[in-house]
Picture 1 (tube, rainbow over the protein chains, first blue to last red):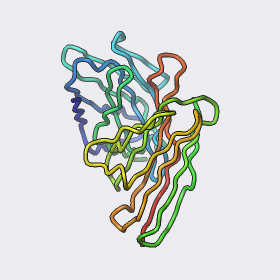
Picture 2: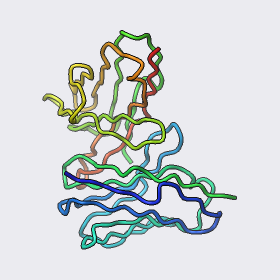
Picture 3: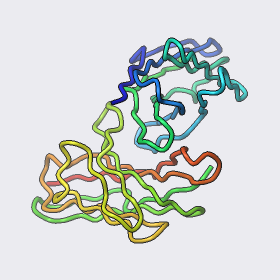
Length: 111
Length: 117
């Protein structure tokens, strides 16, 4: 089955700097890769996703890149703000199958 | 994005009682819903996949007789924790698969924090 690893487990950046979180997956059949943001005690919120037919996708300060050959994908947040502080989860899934989540990255944006 | 509600948001119960948690898709019909469990500072652990009109599919190690799942309509799935014990205390979150578009996006409910005394 699919296995997703995520690094780093914790990340601290200064406000205004960029943050990068990387995930690797094992199942070459996976073709959908969402990223979720979860604030303490709240639901995971979908922030961006990418499908395997695309190498990069951007939405304002957030971007995701996918390298199918190396089986890894990354979340990039530019111009970080304190409200970006949260736990971020990546996931990988073949179409129609269950999500397999990474262990999460706790991002702290320091003022 | 699509809206998923979950009720109750918080429940405290005595050991041995049963607790029912409801998950509703408010603005779309979801043939598939998922139930997750999340321990503090950990990732989401899939417990079971709830399919409308059929039996749920449980992940390995999840007791189906303890965690009863019913998906009686296209907008409602329920999880019943039977004979709850303190070790069942956790954050339970449901999600629903949005069938629009490519049909693989999941939207999460706000979660239910269960505390068993």
